Image (cartoon, rainbow over all chains, first blue to last red; front, side):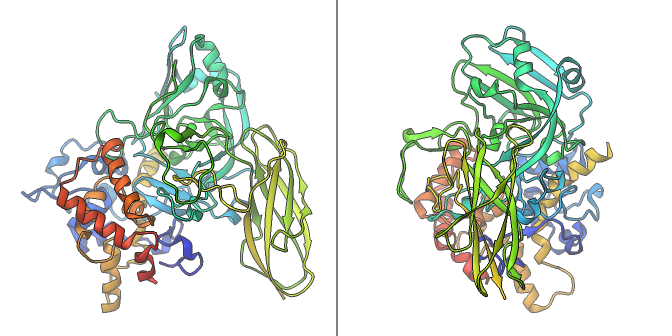
Length: 447
Length: 118
């Protein structure tokens, strides 16, 4: 694969925007129709040679075509639906993302493409757990608020806009597993490197306003979020993911029920037409394709709330330790972290001066300072740091560096939050590969 | 509406992103060998490949598999998780052994399959 030589640790990846490499579906099917069926749709041939769309395969094909296929059982195996002819391989509306996984879709953004203060929609990472809904049409989309509320409500997106103040905020969403690729021994799951994080501008209504309107009962402990994506197995009624947050976090005024992203529609892979944005906590708390918020009197036990999903050991463990399930606790806020988004790593610098910069963010806290080192952490230079545009926005930092002599350098960045907590050099290893906030390093060769 | 259809297309189109490296026209012998490998989503040949390809690939991309580098006992846990929490049917013991042997061999902590590719 083309990128192997550049990033040896992250093989098995392709880039989303190489249209010239696109392959026609017809060619794929001409080469080996049954294999193509299996690969593209997870469709397994029946003994009578008729196509058989298994679970997710059927959902995927339906999503591709934008409609259910009533007579799918009659479609011959290896038959390519006319609606899909000659479609290029590309995540429409995304640019430069690295695809880690294609069913479900998981794609991240290289750090140097995250340089914008506000992450463009085309550069926002994608973390899917299931098969996105075939229709992401805003008209007719409904959100139900129920469970332990005084007045259960079902609202359209227009009604949300009419009944509640509409606000726009820059909000960081970061996948809980961002940085998992660097765990040794490796942890299972998508091998995210650095770019499962973004700070786009989200427009919506405050989750707290909507919950207050419904009337939160006194015994509510936790929210439970439900989206319209289907489980990969294709089993009806089985949710791909349904997480929630403690009610105190849910009432934070920064959480949005969002219907616009960067002033435009949400990208379909980012949850169009309606999603939660619960900044500062693992991205999985920000349910996409949102259809229901259910208030409960106990910690929510939906898919990926239980077991070891989005959980870390309650106490530090040595790398590779097998930890019993009962010793895991649910992740709350994400830790303090920073990225160097300019320059791109691997820079060959002809002069001796360089301005480096990037973003820093800190879960529920704010970033108080960022320091930069060019000598493997022996000495540090304090960077200029901007205040956040609003709570939970990432903060821009920059530093002017001067390299004393030609040679190989690494630039390290270290953010410290307003509670005095800094990014570590080493990873606090945990079995599932979460919360890697170790310092970002780039290489610079001078002369 | 057009956006919706494009969106839906996007959902599935990346499914075959793996083909970027596997051009199928004008096939030279070297390209054919590479194409065969790519056709299996990079899974090296050997006992257990069919089972991994068909059983694991039925619900999710094989990229989910080929990204990993896990000990055999972690792979045991992964298969248990698939049954307990991800709706996989309980595996036939022969299939299970073939899958575990294959995954432990090629997608162990040393990620042997990756070394093979370079």
